[in-house]
Length: 177
Image (cartoon, rainbow, N blue to C red; front, top):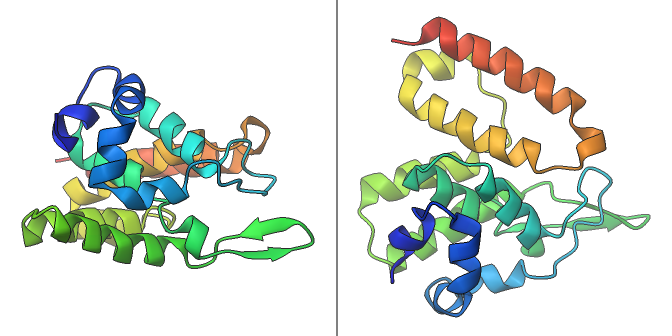
């Protein structure tokens, strides 16, 4: 078993659950997400279950799925709590740093690491037309990550996200090569 085989399985969530001990040994940083509550009205699942739900919505693409696995890994280490509500202002940056450390330890090549870290770092940042013009393929992957992440939020808090996704998809389709 390896990380690629787990993430590329047709039933990715079942495969992760069936290999959670292996995955926890290879990427022990994920264990901080287990049972870590978001405590935020835009989330109805804890960080780990949000991650699994986002993965369940993904295409069979290793870069997208690896990004989704790691996109919120920094949340347990980068939150502030006010009036019982947690906010995660720097979680994408913290997650990207952790991702670089993890992928370097797992001996992925630098170009691949840079791509995944970019996707993790900007998973919450709106995609602009210049991003698409500069690198359509990477912008499209970022969109796929954002789509899965957005749809894994609280069902009652999806309207703004759906509007953003539709607008961005239209922009991507316009620039499609």
